[in-house]
Amino acid sequence: MNERDEQVIKYYQEQEREMILLFAQWCINHKLDPKAVYQEAYPMQPINELLEEVLEDTVDANESDIIDHELLLQVLQVFGNDDLAFVVAEYSQKMKK
Image 1 (cartoon, rainbow, N blue to C red):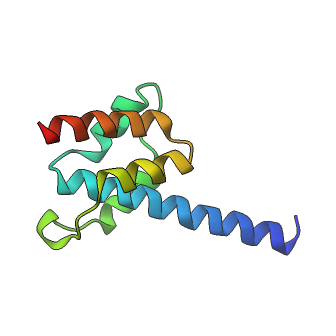
Image 2: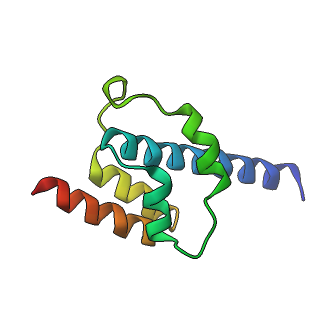
């Protein structure tokens, strides 16, 4: 693997971490358990190790910026997390009612 490939992989991993942090913080902001929401989307998978790691980087909902539902859905879909995006969309709909 050349240096350029390594840089691309590192960039993708950093962006993936940011996506998971965005998801986790959105859950915290809406009083949802990120691990439980993840399990709804992926019931046959163990909890994502990166999700466990980023939970340490979340803040209380009152300290966080507002995270738009649509933004989160777009970010999840960019990373191919369609099942998780579907579950988030369901929660978003319930919150609007």
